[in-house]
Figure 1: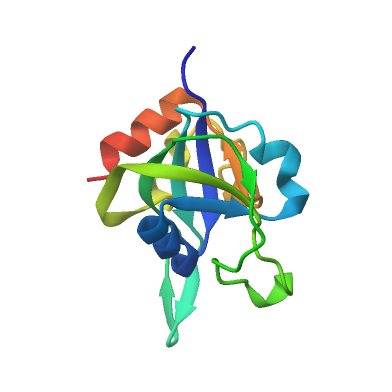
Figure 2: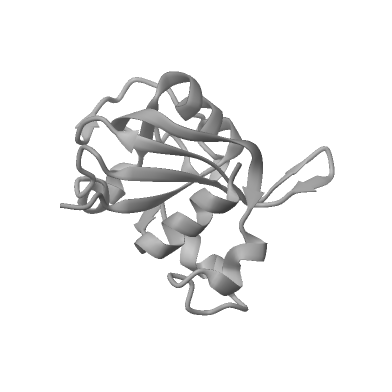
Length: 148
């Protein structure tokens, strides 16, 4: 059976934690989604647009990982919680191994017209407003080809 392709939405700080610790975590409210991830699935890390020192850093895809196991729960603090999420520790976690760390973050906006999972090409950010989502193989292949 072919692996499921996931797009995981995060911020730059938590993306770096995933890179260093080889673990991806989501909030408890996403239990039904994250429990679908199986060993061998791939997870593309999508970092949201952020403003740092008044500079806008665009949303981008930074890396691809493979799930080395299934979801487990761990309440120990690991990730940085965005202010809007209070005391969330992202306890639903998956251990991952790197498949490809992009030399430079791959801006997603130029790829939007070609992405099949994005239906509304004008208001496209609505397609990435969750912790993670399944994307089609063709979109995964496009991202992997473009990211270097």
